[in-house]
Image (cartoon, rainbow, N blue to C red; front, side, top):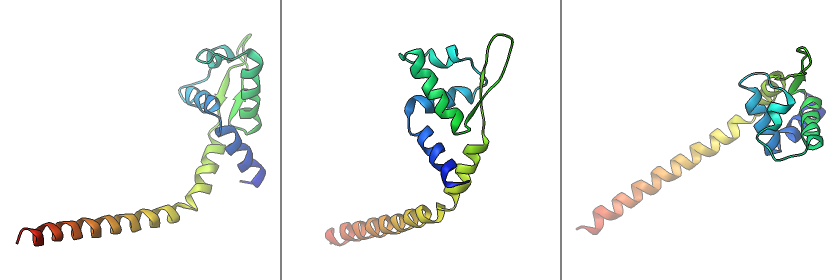
Amino acid sequence: MTEAQLDATFAALADPTRRAMLARLARGAATVTELAQPFNLTQPSISKHLKVLERAGLISRGRAAQTRPRRLEAAPLEDLAHWLEAYRHLWDASFDRLDRHLKAAQSAASKGKTNAGR
């Protein structure tokens, strides 16, 4: 994944409306009208959101009779998941340290209660 693709994907995912549109498309193809239905936005605003998603490669436009249904394209999300996976060891290590700290704190607290009862 190039820096430009990564930037476009993150920019597209940064907006909750676009994330909601992707969630809807994860259930299957949808027309622009269907995608716009849950939002109180103008048609030009919806079109702008769709263009951002298209430029990021997250959706594609099909052709079915008179409509142009949009479909989710999973490849950029898969690429993003691979990119994030390279950083997994960082947060795993942080969670391991937190787990050790919490266990030590719990152990110290239980020892304190035992000694206080004597």
